[in-house]
Image 1 (cartoon, rainbow, N blue to C red):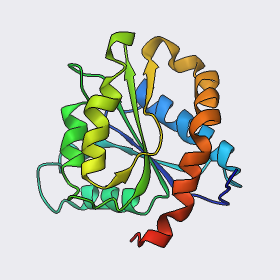
Image 2: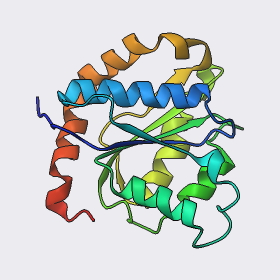
Image 3: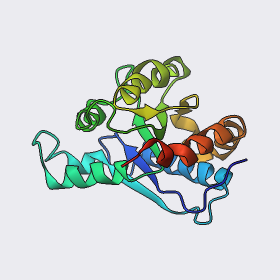
Amino acid sequence: MPTLSTPRVTVVVGNPKVGSRTRSAGVALATTVLRHAGAESAGAVEVVEVAELTGGLFTWGDPAVAQAKATVLGSDLLIIASPVYKASYTGLLKSFLDQFGRDELRALATVPLMVGAAPLHSLAVEEQLRPVLVEIGASCPTRGVYVLEADVGQIDEQFDAWAQIWGDALVGVMSVRPAVGAP
């Protein structure tokens, strides 16, 4: 299994509510990946709450949005987390993702994660969220993660099982990104 000593991990939360279950799921997944990667500092997870940027999302050049973008671009791993909203991700998250140009993420290892109320929306993570991430240059080497709202408090087992299948592929992409000319 590849390892990274101190990867920079960012969780972007597209939930309109700050401190949501979506955030909890994103941070839990980040922690699982860090543990799987053998990271020395398994607590180094930055969180960008898009709800805190609402005032500047529609003003190009807003300093807070620019800082959030810089945080994302400086990451080794990005987790994009959204609740399912109208069978897709939130418009709030879309507004933040629109700040990135085509291929701007430059092969950044990224995991799309969605939290929903029912299993019938489980494909939204693959059919709705993944395509926009790929368009802006994310490398999504794993299956996206879908979590039922009712399971957010007990997702460690689900994430551990996911990491057993996908963790090495994700860590592999994280470890080679500097070789492909990341910023």
